[in-house]
Length: 464
Image (cartoon, one colour):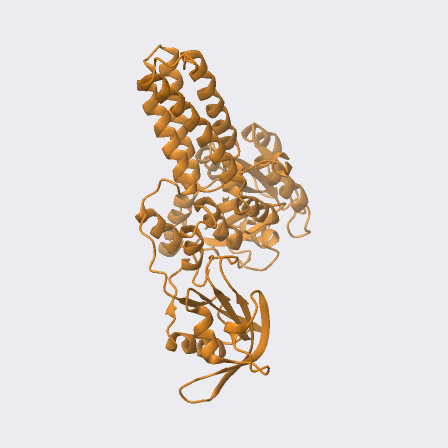
């Protein structure tokens, strides 16, 4: 793998905008020297004379003009005991667009280069401080929308998944080495013969461990990416009211006029630890209104891509053919049926609703009176997690790239097992084992193309 030119990089590591504190981070061989040229401490002591992992009060001064740029606290950390394993300086200045940009421009003028997105974490990976799966967990941690998602990302950052992958690769490597010895040195009597029985035991162990990881992937992916949840129903059944109740804000316009929602409205919400990407759709019905018709078509499209459907019916209206078509359109999908407006006189045929809802969860609500929301949230949580996510000692796979590679690894090790059972020569089976070993290595970055590395880190935020 081609290594970076380890010049000194700098970037703003805090969100842009007004705030109490902003941080400009430098990393590289010249980080301390660059900071030393612009930092003036009341003690008159230079940073090159200062101990590592210390913080200092002082001012930043432009060496060209002698003007004071900012009053700062400067953190000094020398490699290799840093995030990047290089010398790192973090300048804590006042928050604000002008202030933090002046500090950044000052260190860039003194020889630092503006960092690319994710370049600090990329250097940590290239310098061997973390592997690729741990690097990806950094962004998962930043983007976590629930406590549980954050817990999964922290475990991955600490190397929990990496440790399991390395153990499996070592098991395969030892098996491959054993096969090589048997093939190259058959005359050695003191070396245990690699029989089909022994090979089957080794491969079956690896297969079982990969399957165990993949069983966590559905829940892990939900925690990482959120559950695409679409609210559907005829106009004026309470879809927008449901969105507002779950978000606990008035995000959608609520009126008694059918067709008020003309487009798809999206919002993230945390429901009992389940991150939902909540989508309120235009009421699905036949309409002559051109704008509303476009909204209805978009509603039909997002319906196809949904992980969960919240189908809303009106307690005070009779069940219509349009309602029944919605049940048909969501057949085979995860659906929770919500009968809303129970504060009004009943008109709907609940027996027919129960027939249509067979195999699905049914919840009654009065969103106007804020009744039934707790039951709905419980139904969503139980549908997807069923309590299993609470197991603190499990390692969850949440990254789509990891899941794809594990599935390929499982296919490859399964081929090895089937070939072993059919008596295929061991040196042929060795090909499938080697392929499994390589695929698992791609998860932690031990066998991966440079182009993939660049692509992954380009998705990071600037300054991380």
